[in-house]
Length: 188
Image 1 (cartoon, rainbow, N blue to C red):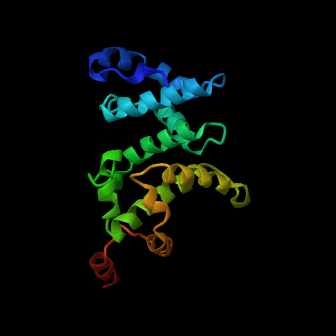
Image 2 (cartoon, rainbow, N blue to C red):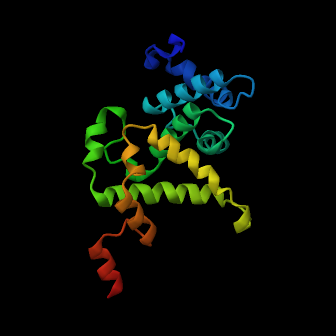
């Protein structure tokens, strides 16, 4: 891997912001997997530094997000695209287990937190796979394998793929974000 990403991004803020659309386009470069990987890695770093907060290009975000399910992209590109998606999902924004430095804290996530995260990922995938008039038998459910493989490759989220109890509860629950007390109040 070239050392090109081993620089202080803050000193490059103006340049990065100016060329952000072009960097995003490079994640779709059909001629070079390496260009795609470096561009997606840079996008993740820019996101972590807050450069993407003001980027309001919906088509650009859609392009980046779709990379998580793109069978023609490398596993590295899919994993980094999933990092971008998880950054956009509120339940991953609670400070527990959102980066590689907090692997230990992920192991201590409550079962409820795991259920909420699994459900949020499933909802995002379902929305993406069924966006528009798609017949049920035409939904490409096999693309979800890419998400599972990416999660397994993320030390801080790997446990979500092996937390069987949480997965079963997420499948059975209509809305896992509601706690027991809220459900009882709704039932009254």
